[in-house]
Image (cartoon, rainbow, N blue to C red; front, side, top):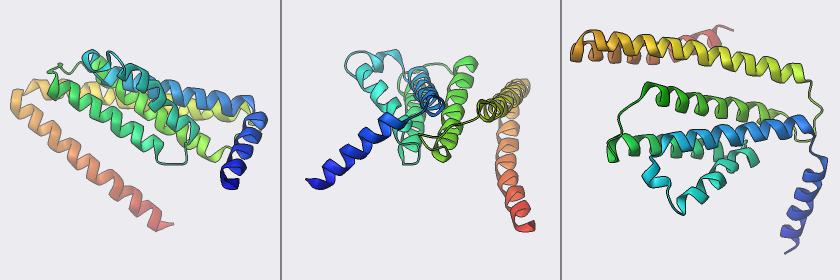
Length: 186
C-alpha cells in the first residue's frame, strides 16, 4: 500500500510542477492521436460506447510518451485504417490517407520531443517552433512525394501500380541501409 501512496504523491507533485510548454506539447500529442483515430476508423465502429474509449486511448501517449503507448496508439490507428478499408469497404481517399499519416507523424515526433523534455522544464519557445517547422517540412515533402507517386501509379494501370510499389520497396530498403552506413562511418 505504501508503494501506491508514493506513486500518488509523486503524481500530485508532478501535476503541481508542470510548466506551460510541456503541457501544451502533451495537449498536441493528445489532439494528434485523437485526430488520427477519428480519421482512421469508420463511423459505424465509432458509434456508441467505443466513441467514449477513443479519447482515453488518445490520452495514453500524452501521459506516458516514453512508454509503449505511442506505439500502441499508432498500431490501433493503423488497425482502424485497415478495418475501414477491408472490413467496411471504404474507398481509399487521398485526403484521408494524408491526414492520418500526418496525424501519426505529428504524434510520433511530439512524443519524441516530450520524452526528452521534463514536465517541469522551462523550454524556449524557439526550440519548439524549430521542431514543429521541421516536422511541417517533412510532412509537406512527404505529401508532395506521395501525391506524385499516386499519380505515377495511375498512369500505367496495374503495371504502373506494380512499378511504384517496387520503387517504394527499394526506397524503403535503401534509406535504412544509407543511414546505417552513415552511422558506421562516424
